[in-house]
Image 1 (tube, rainbow, N blue to C red):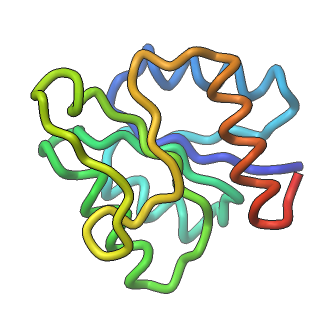
Image 2 (cartoon, rainbow, N blue to C red; image 1 turned 30 degrees about the vertical axis):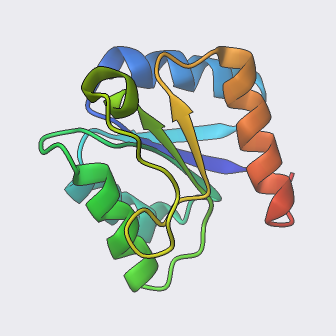
Length: 127
């Protein structure tokens, strides 16, 4: 079964995403901050990571993505953000600063979430 790890400090977002993804047959685990998320990646070995940008610190998700890449993890990362909309800042994928595979704006449409997850997994040879 394909394992997805959600790292987000918003319990409602985690619960909604978990419900949608589990209904599609994915195994879902979660962590509520970057530290727990890094540990969970090491122990659970997920096939894909759904990662929030802003958690305890405004750039926790970005720093976590960079740390995972530094450690050699190549799992697909789908980054969720409300930063672009809330702060009028436009952040996008970048191999060094924002090493993620895809961005999605919050709030997430459930159908688009599933489509993005499936596309990222397919691109990496899964699903």
